[in-house]
Structure formats: C-alpha cells, structure tokens
Amino acid sequence: MKLQVQEQSVRVRVTEAELQDLLSGSALRLNLSFGGQDLLALEVAAGHETSLQPGAVWRLRLSDMALRDYAETLPRRDALVVGLTGSGGESLRLEFDVDVRDSVKVRGARKGGTG
Image 1 (cartoon, rainbow, N blue to C red):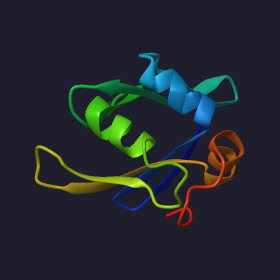
Image 2 (cartoon, rainbow, N blue to C red):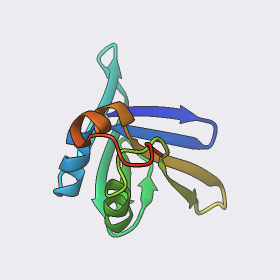
Image 3 (cartoon, rainbow, N blue to C red):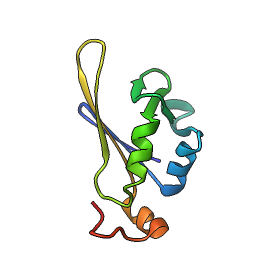
Image 4 (cartoon, one colour):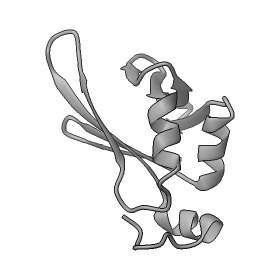
C-alpha cells in the first residue's frame, strides 16, 4: 500500500492482492517509523460507509459497496474519489485506486481502454 498526502488531499494506492484482502474483510496497515518512533500508521478496511478517523493510527474505512462497484470496473486509471467533511466543516479529498499496471497484469486489459 502506498500513501500520498498533499494539502487537504489523501491518496491511497493498493495492489490487486491488497484489494482482494480488503474485499474479503481483512484490513491493510501501513507503518512509518524512524529512530525507534512511530511517525505514522494507517489502517484501511471496508466498512458500512467511508470515513477517516485521525489519531495515533489513522483509520480509513471505505464503503464496501463503493469499493465493490469500483473493483468491477478495473483496470482503470482514475481513482475512487470521496469528499469528506470534518466536524469543524473542513473538507478532505480522498482518492483510492488500484495500481493500473498491476491490475492489467492480473485482470488483462479492459475493452475500450483503462479509464
């Protein structure tokens, strides 16, 4: 799993194998540590609806239905995009995608292109 963070935007990219783990109910975890200290931890799982809970471990839940709908359209270049609004009214753009090269390897090319 790869994580890209920009101002008010988070992008999570996974492989086909990691997507299958999510669809089967398993959670993915990314840990970044340095000098013996945890800098960042992210847990991604499927759930009832899409949400992000910050904390010592960021907990990202992706709507199981949206995730399955997205998976049916792979391979594709564009991401599943969700806008999240925090309790203070701030907004965050969340992008979730499956590496298109890995997806083509696993699924073969989609008729009409890859997104």
